[in-house]
Image (cartoon, rainbow, N blue to C red):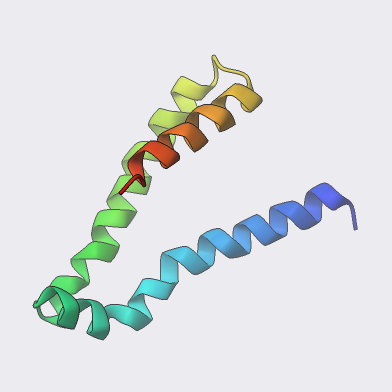
Length: 84
């Protein structure tokens, strides 16, 4: 199996896991936030809407930038967003 295909498969598994793992944690999330489980489920909807709207925009804007620079830009934004 080519290394690139293995990397793609691992990446797809990681993305799929992050999208669906929250559903099993909704009771704990709802409890921590002090809301009902269905209300906590709106977090899943919010994430899905963000991906639905953001992915095509990032793809369209990213066509003018090299892949390496786009990756560095997105990683930099992630670091900025995750600062405490």
